[in-house]
Image (cartoon, rainbow, N blue to C red; front, side):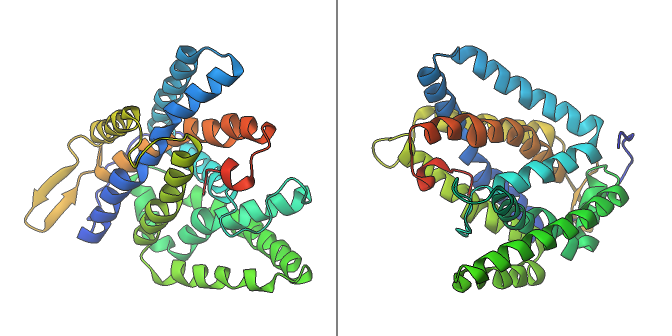
Length: 298
């Protein structure tokens, strides 16, 4: 998993480049609320705000270093934590609630999150493997892990389906085949960009805005400042990303736009998940908040 960088170059289409830019411009900013969440959490817990911010930034830096030292391991961690992050939101309302059985909550989380992190790469492996090569990872190891994950996903989906069928919630079975069909027919980066920007990030933005009780339409100045800093990070990681050749717009291998976006996403996602899925959720859960208010990771 710890591999030396090799020279690889892929030619991304204009649509793929647009998707990567959309992820960076419209998807990444939803994590800018973490600053306000940390401020709220430290105030309610009596913790040191500066120390929490320092820990957050340290995690970003360490995650970024890990990505370049061990890309295969980092991608596996990224897929694993993203499965939890996307699935724990219970966007399809399949029953991730405290009164449900633990195994059902786990299966529902894996099934929903795995649609993006397991099923998508498996159905488009020819394309995804090229992305993984460009990210300097061992795509063979990743494929083996994804195949194992696919088995776990299928078992989890079966458990959820049986539960919905027995509990007479059969109407909730309809979205999954439709989503699977969309995953299959759409380009992988297009589907991920639509999901990440229009579903995950937009829902998080609305719930965060409401939970933090901002007045008016626009969030605080810190939101915009941190968003700009995140864009700067992506630009730095992907510095020298574009080179124009006679054949079109080409992304050089080290560094590049693809790695700039996903390495930065990984570095920002690790502390983001710790803040949203554990720190903040645990506080609001003890306050007796509703699941809709508490869960921000949809």
